[in-house]
Length: 398
Ligand SMILES: *Cc1c(COP(=O)(O)O)cnc(C)c1O
Image (cartoon, rainbow, N blue to C red; front, side, top):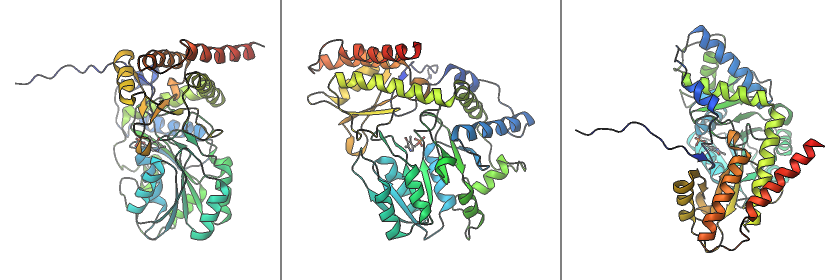
């Protein structure tokens, strides 16, 4: 008879594209005793979770909740509720997640048109306007933080252009929410979804989502049923709203975890959270550049929480990532799609965005790159990153 070993996952420093390091308070929340999903205590927890989600999304949208599923379920929920068969949806594709969105939309019966940008670049409002004028889409889908390339897409003007031509804008904020401002109301975003395991410092399993007034109106006036029973926002709103109509059993302990994760973010303060992501990004970036590594994303449009750099000439991608994991317990991401084997994706997400992680990774990378024969001044990465932290301390002290 086979015996199965006790569960003993190694302790890792998660610095890839997600999942990211989980805050100890979130882990403790997961281990709390499970209660019924219609228990009054749980219902109150759902209400409070929705209130906190509205604060993090910076929105007053009533229809704001967490989909039981990962970020991709959030994507699917956003799309299937707004799309009816033969609706035109324009999807902006400059990486893996834009392509995924186009696939999801086509499966939902949309007539999908795409515009493309080289990986690492972002879309201008003019480009989107041109396509919107030509195709007159009901819906424009765009990724705010393209985790496959590290590019940061500005949204405010794009949203304005889409609305001027009578469309709605659907935004993937899986990697951005909790790490940089996602101003749902101020920018007029119509539907925005995220995921629990990136900058929210939570395990994977829940997808926060919010629908604005235009989206709600479109949903209320649908001619056809939403193609997915599980992701039907109207049915889900009756579960999350006052009616409490049983729909599915919410993952109770994941709700605890997200509750605690959002509480942590609000305790620290959104502005402080964003500043912390930026500071650690600046330190990491200075260290990586001191090693001669180049970012894949366009200058001026680099994400603080996802640092994608080219694997330097003569260095073996797989060896470095394997040794980082085995010798230093650090996980970083390899390249996806056309960046496979050619890029490293280094996450500084949520609880993971802290100096310990930055300095540990830079120290380990110095070691491994030296072994691979990559030339640089020993100690330079850690020293350069430390300078950034010291400058920051000087600024805050003055
Ligand atoms: C991670 C990610 C997703 C998918 O989320 P899963 O939780 O893996 O399903 C979607 N969009 C972006 C931008 C992501 O980074």
